[in-house]
Image 1 (cartoon, one colour):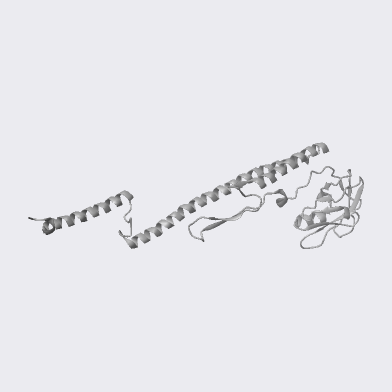
Image 2 (tube, rainbow, N blue to C red; image 1 turned 180 degrees about the vertical axis):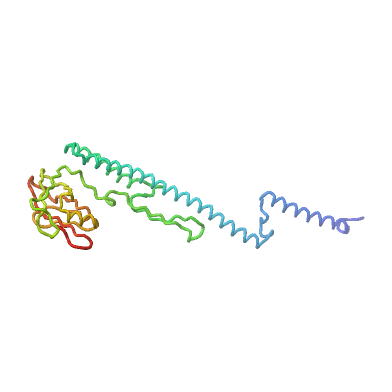
Length: 275
């Protein structure tokens, strides 16, 4: 009797059938996965390269998400800054409006109330603007955004503080502007001719000096070099502080309703000081 174990033809047919079945299974696996290499048996070296490329691709996909999140954070900060800008523009409008001589002290008080409310709102926006519970406008944000899958592919994002205390020196509206030149003309020789300030209030006030009252030489010195420094001296100078850059005077204490006399000295970056 003939058996398959001794039938050479049958053994060869079985061998080729097994090989065909293995190839069919491999083809079906590749067809199903869409990959040429599904295991180390398919291609060990190729599998190592494929895994490396897959890792890089995953890192790049995450880096894209990181970049999008970084853009969203910056857009959030930009939105807050846009609102702050609108408020600053409104304060600028009020400042220009209140410079008109038709308004009373009460009108300026009311305008100041609006300015104070705007300042408080600016600080509120700066303190509370967040992205994913991370504050972005209070000056504390200084981080990096990973824009690639390597350590070197980062973008530094630093957002400064938008709080009013960190960005601007803002004073109240001038209610009493009574700055006049003294009887003797101001000269550029340093003569102590002085300035008289007549105060109509007993409160601390901000007084703006109108530079048009000074002599031609003084004005020309300021015009030729506006980056010099102002200071006050002599007479009642101890009762006032002056912004070295803008020349804006502020009484340091409550002032009596009287006239104060002192010297304003402007020193350009190069040249002689003018009084």
